[in-house]
Every structure is written in structure tokens, then in C-alpha cells.
Length: 548
Image 1 (spheres, rainbow, N blue to C red):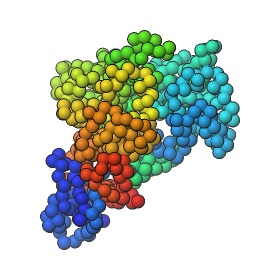
Image 2: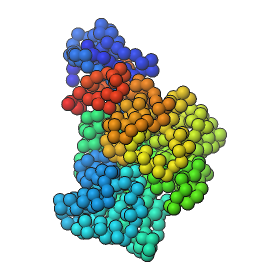
Image 3: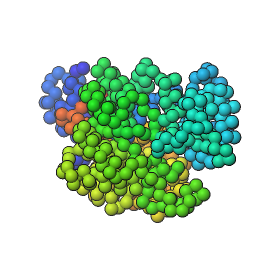
């Protein structure tokens, strides 16, 4: 491809200084000039093409620091979409419709049902309803958080679940309160049992490669050119590396290799066995640089580890704080092994108690092993005690954010039902993070968030309101940040968080030519228009990979 120059547009570099430039030049997939038109022409030489932006806006390609691209691709290609607002009868209706279009013996996959229906789903009566609706086909439905499942008798049979099957560690097989028999409702690690049966019956290498291609194509439509995959199996990493070696991967993928048994089923090796294979996956655009740890579950089911008690209820009782998946000595030992393998940790912490535990363990490591260049992450960073914000800065820990789920919406409504208002008053402290010097990074958690659309998250960071207008009010408007900082959360800051600051995140000389051309300037448009931003084209390593 011939070198080219981009001119006559609003070019936001998202660099540290917040510079805008008049032009930038690209050669061999890299940015070779960024500044005045004259200097860029000089750097490119006489033999180059010119792209006239005609007043349109340009910014770096966006980075999604928490993305389950394989699960997102599967959801879009293979699953039945169940809106989280669906009633019990409506969920059954979606299953009946899916059964009509699913051959006998094939699995019905879908989500995301409202976890608020847990009491009704955890019964033999509900299991019977699901069995009838599915007409004998195995069914696995996910809840809104992706941490829980509702499955039918055929799925439990395929998974080998009987009346006598014990609960796994950190998981619960739902049982009818009247007779103790399994209902098909699964919490946390129990989900892996039905997921494993579904995985072996449904997906092979060809399907997984199709899923990866499809997922990256979806991401490119939103202007995303890099992700941190938040829970990466051997097969996922192998597929990404294979596509990249073939020149067919249109995004950077930073892998988070699973460090221990998790709520989800992950085929293949995990932990040290997987870490030892990491260099097999390392390519120009695939970087297996992180390990994934689950420290707790989610607030909606009382599985998030909290510093203060949940609301008193029949389910939780009084003074219930949830719990972590491991103790401080266990976590400290695991983190030490992860650091020894040359990896940083991405730690799922939905509750402020889990974050406290994570920082305590990192502090133990620093006391024993001294400073480290490895930058660990608190994934989701949603409920943070003020004391721990300062510690995150001091310990060089990233606040990985999920702003697509932070403004008033169905997620927040479900959390408010179980946590006290005083606890929620310390939620999502993004402005405090920046003030303290904590690196922030935006992520979608797609497909937990139904779309990886970063523009919704950027507007949410700026307004703290629901961009769709469905849910009124604002979630802690005192923690709103500027449009430029919100853009950097998905560009420069995110690149720093995932260890690719030298490669991507800003339009600067020497970096990969990853950029997007937009219909308006996100930094200066009315803030209520940010979520409506249209990506006109997406460019990865200097190549156009998407055009509207």
C-alpha cells in the first residue's frame, strides 16, 4: 500500500498534551508524521496519496480493556437473544420459538434473563416449564451478569448432574426448597458443569475461528482496533494467533490467561500449565501478557465480597457480606506465581471487599519482592472505598472501568435492590481515580453488556446519565469527567493499562496507524450527542478494515 497523508480534518491525537494536528502521514502501517501539512508532506516524500477528510473528525482507534470477544461472537452468531426485561413467560416464549428452529438434539443457547427471577426459577415447577418449552432440546440460558445459568433437564443430563451431585467449590446447584432436587438453576462455578457439556457438543475449531472473525468485524464497526480479552482459554489464544499469522486479524488482542478454576467453563489447560504455553500465542498483534483471577461474583446474587453488609433480606439474612474466592495467603501466593511467569493480573472485583483483598495481596508482594513494572488491574473497579483509591495509585494498579453499565440502567437497578444507599455512594469514583493519579481504562464487558459500543460508555463517563433516556437521573454526577479524558479512557490511558502504550493509543510518530474517521468531533460536540457518534471508517495498521 502506498504511503498516504490525511489532511483537512479535525485530528485529535489523544496524546498526553491533548494536541490536535493539521495532518498525519502513514507508511508501512505506521504513523511517520503528525503535525503541520508541510512537515507531514516532507516526511512522506513525493510519492504518496492524499486523503481529504473534508472536515470530518479523526482520533486513534479505540481500545476495549474488558472484552470477551469469543463469547460476544458466539452470542451474535449462535444464541437466542432474550432481553433482560423479559418476564418469566416471555423467556419461555423465546425458548419455544428457538426450539421450533433448532434440530432435535442441538442445544439452545441464550441470554440474558433477569436474575431477579431467581426465586421462581429455582423450582421443579419452573424446570418443568422449561422442559416443555424446549421440546427436549438441551437449553442453557445466561443471566444478565453471565455468572449464573438456567438450564433444563436435558442439559443437566448431558452434564451428568443428578440428585446426588455435590456443589462445586465457589458454586451452587440450585435445588427445589421442597424436596432438594436440582432445578437447573446454577450459580457461579456450578455453571461450568452445563457449559462444558454445551461446549463439547456445539463448538469445534472451525466454529471458533468463524466466531473470532465475526467478533473482530463487529468491534471494527464501532471503531475498536484493540481489546484486552478478559478471560482467555488456550483455544481462544491459539485461534487469535493463527489468524494474525495469516494476516487476517484486524485488531490487537491482549490475552488474560485464566489462572484458576472459574465460574465459567474454560476448555484446555489453566494456571501454570497455560502460562508455560504463552509464547506459542505471541505474535505481532496477540500479546498474552495477563492472567485472569476471579476474586468474587456479582452483587445481584450476593456473591460479591463487600466491606459493609448487604441489605437484610430473607435470602441474605442480617450482616451478610458475601465472600471472596480465596484467602489473602492464597491470593498472595497466586499473584507471586503470576508475576514469576512475567504476567500482570486482571482481577475481577465486583465488591469493595474484593478490591481491598486484591490490594492487600499486592502490598504483601511489594513488601517481600520490592517494586515491579507489572501493572495489575482491578477489573470493573465499580465499588471502591476511598482509602483504596489512594492505594491503587501508590501500588501502580489500574482501575479498569465498565462505564456501559454504570449510568442508571437495569444493572444499577438490580444492584440497588441488594446494597445499602451508603455503599452505593462510593460507586464508580472515576474523577477521584484521575485526581489520585490512578490509570483508568474503559471496557465494555461485551457480551455482558449487550453491545461493545464505546460511544455509549464515553457519554456515560461524561454525563453519568443513560444515553438512551430510558432510565432517568444521574449516577454520582460529581464523578463525571471531561470528554477528552473519557476519550483517553478508551485510547491513551487504556493503552497504558494493557501494556501497549508504545504501540497504540494516540496518533504519534512511530505508533501503529490505528485510527477512526468520525462524523463529528467527540471532544467538542454536545455531550448528549456523544453516544450517537457514527464511525465512518476504521483503519488498522494502516489498512481500512471497516467502512460505513
